[in-house]
Length: 316
Ligand code: SF4
Ligand code: SF4
Image (cartoon, rainbow, N blue to C red; front, side, top):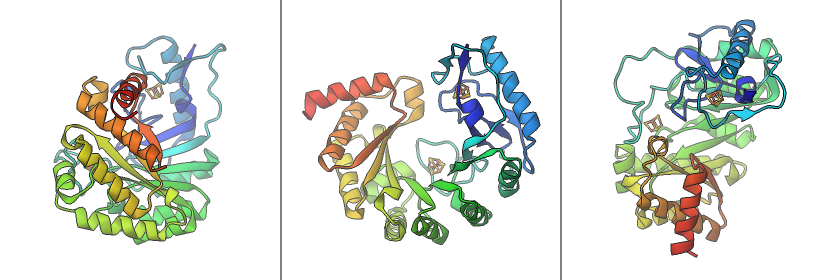
């Protein structure tokens, strides 16, 4: 028996579908059509039960080859679903940034994001959310949504913790309040340590705006641990000097938590370069020296072994 806990613990809102996960491994993810309004939990539960069966049949169109599948010693019985994590990506293609490693901002035929609050309220009303369910705002850029603040306030009022991924181009006074209340955290993918590198990686001359937003968020937060600053390492920012400047900026803000990632397209195609590996090794070395909490993202065992080898060679 193979199973994945995300099937029963997580729910992702996509532009026109519900899924148990984001498609980070470039494989066939189970998808349930959804275009807004109430979530029919009976129908969704049947869909997940059918998905679990298809996984046992090794249907190549359902989760095949996913590293998150684990063997179970007993047969699968899909329970009444109660989600511990909601991820909101229904606005995937709404973004004011132009990251060179991302296609989401590029023009195309994309449906308008549906109102997310009625869907979340329907889950709440059906008892489909764990009391401590975490709601992760992805995107796209959530602060551009008209219902970002009203939805955020409803979630806060109902005790659901929020984790907001934002590019910080636009400062949100509501995020300040969320941080100050202790009801949420944020994640900012900065990927650079100065204006020139920022423009090269993020596609625009917005460094000063982003610095101003981040400064306000740190001032508003109860603790710096509420703010993750991320660095996605790839060819355009993998010089050691680039990484060092990022650390200087993080120190200036008093950051405590940083994230290291690679471009997931490079991870999925096995094309992360040795330069990027050396930059990652330096990143981890500096994080340790500066006593920053460094989280690895999109770093599988193979990449970790390469990073550790580079760290031993160059920065031991
Ligand atoms: S097995 Fe993989 S693709 Fe399937 S639900 Fe889990 S994480 Fe998603
Ligand atoms: S901020 Fe996120 S969604 Fe927007 S362009 Fe950058 S990576 Fe893509």
